[in-house]
Image (cartoon, rainbow, N blue to C red; front, side, top):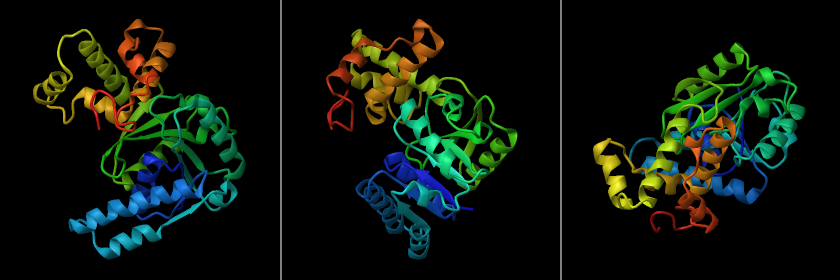
Length: 280
């Protein structure tokens, strides 16, 4: 079986590594050679670290890298592919356009999956003529490390598609969670509002950034505080997800904190811009 990963960002490259380490040939489809090569360089760096720590052998590293190919030509990428994992920007119009193209070039039996954290699987699937073969696979960052994965069914996703995807996720070394489509699914439905509430707590002067994070780390046994986690995810992503929930549910409990919106407008997005709640 051959897999295509469409996307060359942090998550796309991480998923490519996951697939190759599981022993499957994988082709990485990207918009530019530069972005693909950056992703492959990151994968090799990860594998070199594992090699230095004795977690893998040189033979295993070479085998993993040998299973990875890449291209910027979608027709070429789709040749002989049985399973596609899309991982691009969280914008519905972009994903629908990609799935429309994938539907045209992939074989009729190919399953198309999207690594989305909040968008509707059904709406993405409606851009294709194979909605029964479209499903969500929400990996957690960093994909090669985190064992958890959400498998999200769309409105018309078949049980056969779900069963195949779940089985494959287990072969990838993941622990799949079955989710019926709902905004935010399970993890982010709980996690993002918690982060938003932490931002409210800080903006209201209840406690400092550091003390809020210490409280959740030591008081709730979380590995990272919610404000540090917001910086890691990206404040723009947190805001986007909160706005999506408010639109989808129409419930004011999903109102984004004004401070969050102000920080995003100022370009203070967290680690990727060097400044968020912390300075990097």
